[in-house]
Length: 137
Image (cartoon, rainbow, N blue to C red; front, side, top):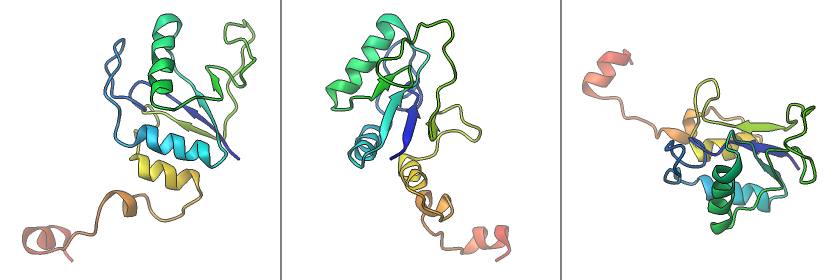
């Protein structure tokens, strides 16, 4: 079991803050699968108040219910003045160094796959013509 902190805007949905963006392809399905496999998901977002409630409701309507929201566990007070940094095994956020990988890549990495990331994202390219000359192979 792993604890996975997930951002909302730009990660689960496209950026449209303060509105709700369109779902990023496979985001909800991947997160639900990770959850079904026994992982704890925490929604870790800068949204607060009504905007946070709106995001949580959006996820819930799609069958994605988080272990905790903006907290390390369900009974933690997110407004507590001594709130510490969230402890998680993985942080999925579009602001990561290098950006947000494809959700298939995210799933593979969380599950310990060691193949290069691009094996999941890009199919093999047949190198002919100008591409073969450009790459020199």
